[in-house]
Image (tube, rainbow, N blue to C red; front, side):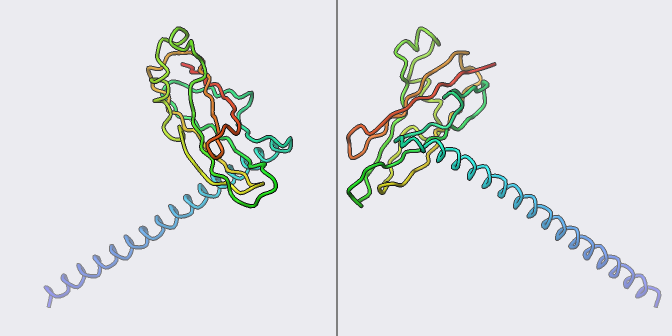
Length: 183
């Protein structure tokens, strides 16, 4: 009889531990879910505000807008940065979408003398968004990002990037942005 009592106490203790562990697991999962929902909401809000600011810049009927204060991104060595830009199709008289392409290049010919590295090395800083293509109906806007990852050993200098947009193979518009590498 005593042996069964000990076995019963052990199984009740085990059940209590399992129930408590499951409750903690569920509470932990709910907490993580709420954290991620809040983070997703914040990212969506920031994206919408950036789009709103870009749309305000289009009030001048410009074909392209780079969204940076003074077209300058100050990036620390080893950091990454995204430069947002938008292209608007101002074509009228048609309802067909145009095929747009863009390419991000280095605009400064003397970059080797100024920074001590070649244009090809600097172009390797572009993680995504060096080139892309998209279709855009008249009156519509397309938003893009050129994401830069500046190496920790990058020289401390300022580099001018140019984003050239072509529509159906012809130059449509272009704009620039500068990247100042800081320590």
